[in-house]
Length: 92
Image (cartoon, rainbow, N blue to C red; front, top):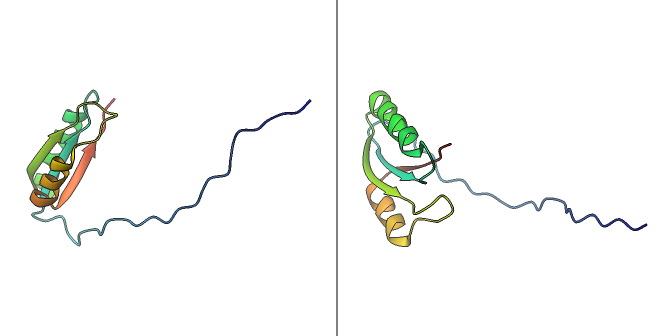
């Protein structure tokens, strides 16, 4: 009997992380709601805490059509222009 194993070893890839700010104080916050249940609630609570602790404010907010869709290029440009830091929320 021959057994076929369809699994493969993971492929190593170089990963470059975005530069991290030295401080969160006063940064402009962008939010991306992925439309999952409670995503908007999670993002709202996070924004409140970041405002209280670091003086951050929400300056851009976008909502995806569905969890599996990407935001469009215009939304990305807006977030880049209007926010120093972007959080993409999940729910469930």
